[in-house]
Image 1 (tube, rainbow over the protein chains, first blue to last red):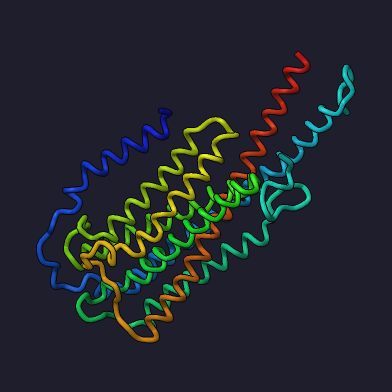
Image 2: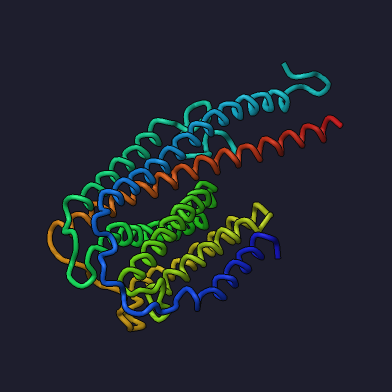
Length: 91
Length: 243
């Protein structure tokens, strides 16, 4: 068994052990409205969260494009090395 | 592997094309902001029985539906991999699993928050739909663990594809859980009216755009990582030949 699968089994076992406490009945729900006047705060928080995730995706994608450029250059040099005649360095 | 088969949209130099991804990601963001706006201003503030806590359903239900759609794509891509042995299908399946797991986690979290507001407990193991969605999440975590555990690059995609097909059994179980196993504490329908239905439909489109953007992002990164590994293998081969 390799380590990712062992970690998966360990996390599952921990979740199963914590499950009874997680599902504990807290009695009747509170009377007060849980959102009340916070509707716009929820709107702002959700919008900021989605924008942050999108910004992360765009920034990391732009970085991966730059990495792809450098990789393409390396691949061309490897092509030249592999196709060079024996005993002669590639141009 | 060549530079051109790493992703469906690449330029001549092999780099991922930025345009479609940027449009996709920003489009998804615009749809999600519009969804937030609809939830804040358009739909009823509260419904009978559970008050305003039902508003979280505009995120929970679309995420749940999109989760099953993404896992359905995983099953399809896995079948196509086994039929064609084209590695692109394996990468697509892994990308959709990553996006599906995120959607699945959002479904579980929002469902749990709603349960606390409505039932005053975070979870109810007697509810077959909650439990089946949690099992589905664990099964697809197992898919990720399987991919990380098998080092043989010939066997790994095959095992993952078989797992991806078998795990799809969860989709009908989640869909039919209440019908098959009873105990309908899970709400079947929350509120009625054209504005509620329209906002839910809009939410499904918005979240589908968002999670497929995440899948596309993962697909590009996996493609580049595989090219790096292939380039390193070539470097080692050249070094061995020249030694």
